[in-house]
Image: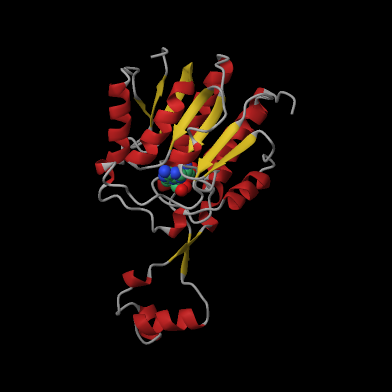
Length: 286
Ligand SMILES: C[S@@+](CC[C@H](N)C(=O)[O-])C[C@H]1O[C@@H](n2cnc3c(N)ncnc32)[C@H](O)[C@@H]1O
């Protein structure tokens, strides 16, 4: 792609964010109704002979009870799990990704763009789209995930993960093929999108990128966060960014980041973007 006119670039990236979050189509969004929240005296339950009878009838007909429409406020700050969007990260944190990527492009900070913990891939799609909009022809986007969901906490090695078991949540297991087809849907799947498939402890130490300009961590657990920092922080260029999605909302993640920064004498200021996301800009080679 040749360089876009600035206002078109801005509109393209903004449109990409609106699509990736489904913010633009939020009125059409369809959410499953939790039947256990239906009380026996609701008209719907009564007309079908009670909640259990309703549940049985829906199952026998292979129907779902759904409600239409999502909450734009939740999508703005990424505090719901959207049914179809390619990312659960809200607009505010996606704008943070955008400003970090555009900052490394403007300042010519060397390195690729990486996310560890991609789910349906939306943040990495945005990263690739921003490179396209700025006619960058060099940098790769690295898409690191188990594509099986989170590991069960290894409490012996990482006591901070005790009580934070998300390993059975099916919604969090999204296959690499699903993520590839999401990239393809936006016309952004090419050989500059590199998949690292498997547990971070196996894939990240062997990853072949030389430098990283933006490293985004979104693996929730202490283990997932510290594995990513141990393997990848040494490759972050001076002037590059580390973005942490879960710092404000997940104690295990926050502890991993604090422990890593303390152990490596990192004092670069943490900047908050919303109720959970932070970033810092690497100022020196520690
Ligand atoms: C909260 S989701 C990421 C959300 C995503 N960034 C987005 O844009 O919506 C966490 C992801 O991290 C992955 N994950 C967590 N720990 C991992 C690990 N140790 N190794 C590989 N993948 C991991 C999970 O499979 C899941 O896809």
